[in-house]
Image (cartoon, rainbow, N blue to C red):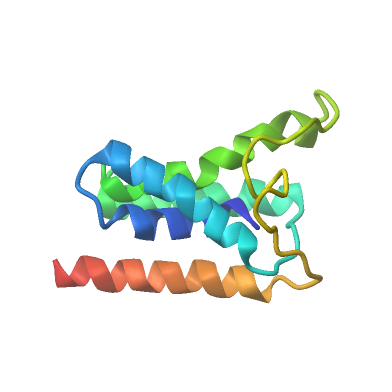
Length: 133
């Protein structure tokens, strides 16, 4: 799933917590949930383009030190283990995160629609939640 979708979902989940460490952990847990939906892995260039845009929006809307930002960073954090291989620094090695090493199911398919809907839905819910505060 794209980093931007994981960040959106993590920000939404993080918004339910006042304590930023809890928001971060909840965001990381949301990563597993996002990985379980059937999706096609996005190309690296898409992640490199979309994820900073989403993080910038979250930081401007809620603040860099917000629970939403902590949740977004938590949502992204499990994919750090793929970064060395994606950058060509070294080959992919055994993954640690449960949906990456198949302790939990990782939903694979040939479509991008589910992650687009999850990311957009999470952003919409986050925007609606912020209006209610």
